[in-house]
Image 1 (tube, rainbow, N blue to C red):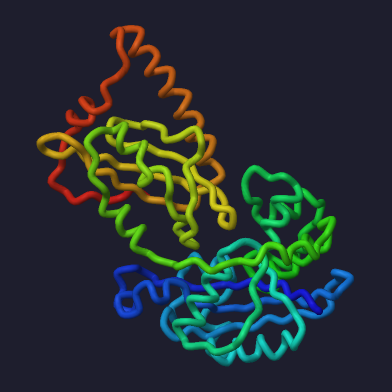
Image 2 (image 1 turned 135 degrees about the vertical axis):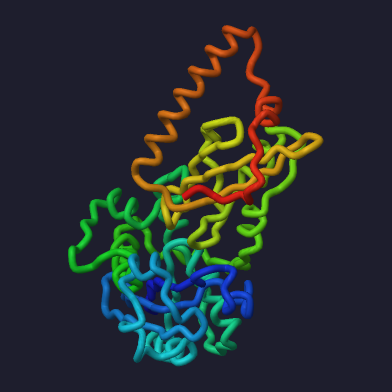
Length: 334
């Protein structure tokens, strides 16, 4: 039996208000544009590899962020096979006796959605999760990204193999796999694909109504979010949100595959009381963590000074109601 480590890259709509997305909706949130795979033998050494670019048929314009990460654009994909042909090529290369492995749970969900959407009849074995095995072996409190796992195992990246290329990521994943104490234990971690939806993101942009600020931040709406890249559920950093002004908060979360995320929250006071909470998630810059931590220290000091002066903590709900309202529609800050 062979182990086949597979990694996928996919495109997304330029806008979730676009005509093409309105046509396909949540049936195809991410359209695959590359399959990369490495074949590993019984001795856990790399024996063969394959890279199959895929020409998209729906999200044909490559999102700028995707193009920057993957270095795949219209020129690289112009002569590539479409999805069904690419899957036939991949299955033929895999052979007869093999099991599929991935890093994390994103790929299996995207693959399942693409196979369902395009009516692909290729039969594949369950995809087993190397990341879960790695986390259990090394007692990780949170899932490690591929780069972090390589650093822990002292695996140096090759300058010619840049990340976010499906073949290169599959190759690096195979190196991590081979360094695990008992790599074959990965078969104990079969994955089940998850339903990919975008409605959660739209809901957060539109906001949700709450009676108090405390109720808003204690809610699941504020605590359990989705990565804006892969849609995977993420939770807010245990330190929680940081108040910038009465109606603006920031926070951090972490996606196991896409790293640190910055959360911007806007509270809109409603006439008659209560508020609407809206939020925006984006990939965080390296400086964002330091900024959030600095702002947290500053606000704690200011709140302590306020309580010492007035004899009671701030009334966040009363201060929110005093925020100057604007007739302009809400726009998330960039």
